[in-house]
Image 1 (cartoon, one colour):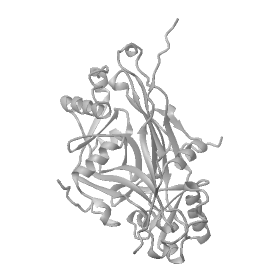
Image 2 (cartoon, chains in turn purple, yellow; image 1 turned 90 degrees about the horizontal axis):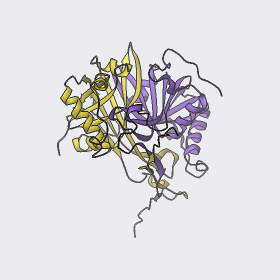
Image 3 (cartoon, chains in turn red, yellow; image 1 turned 120 degrees about the vertical axis):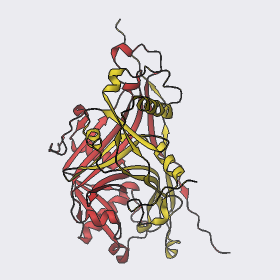
Image 4 (tube, chains in turn green, orange; image 1 turned 180 degrees about the horizontal axis):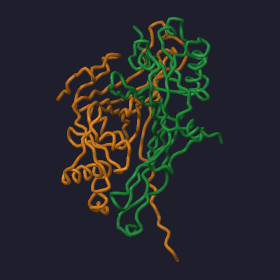
Length: 204
Length: 204
């Protein structure tokens, strides 16, 4: 499996055994999450802003209105950090101290670049839709030139990235294993609920 | 309902109709999410790091090992931004452009302060456990003095905060409403799965 390089930014220091530089692991986490969080600073003030993201090969994309401050700032090529987190469960140990969470997260570093090429932008948006709802791109009303012009698309190469994963049961101290309390994992599951069709009211 | 102040940092500029400064809304979103993302900068490099959080009244808490870089940096009182996001559904419109997500997010600004007071730290940790599993604090092996000493607890007053919420069906252009494609919302639901008890293997 192809490994991402460990760089000064992505080398995990705490709980290093949970770090995973495998591209497949990183990509799978990015693909499963619907939103990422982006850290960037303006005049020394950090911001943490959520937005939808998607991936095509080794590139992470975000998009939005040309008027978005997030996109306008990032388009300048300032340093950014992106994080995606999936919480998989609550780890209930015998000791309060050993409680934990099962999760899969990715932290990425780099600079976003505006996607100026129309064909890349179109292919990327199509890939986004097809990732969420295969086959749908051909069914919906596709973007007009005006809509494309109103949209900023930014790309971040997935090069400086690391996943961190915790899974499995609680890890209690040996001395606590007999403590008379239920211990184990409460899994958290995210699933698609019943689709809610949008009925348009028509004038009678 | 008590409103949070709109400050230069928390005033929402894009899609301002989705901004909500009501404390109850902000608190409910913070309480439902299991993890937050924290943006902070070290030597001009922004980082976006996930961690568990919980709330007691108007204070957001995070905790971890004394060795955590996140906690050590934040404990210096540097500016931070915290974001919590709940993705509630995928909004499938008739036009590609009008696709959206239903979500509830909170962005907070401020500086974390170390919790030095032992009684506050203890009460806060108890509140964290009781929020996740009411009644459990009294059942588990409570923290030893060594464990308390190894744990850093940081507090962020919830003063500069704003929620942003999108809900409801797609909003398509009038001209697209007849487009022959299914439109509506695909709800995303997070639920507790079947608890997985931890069986300790005993030597025979």
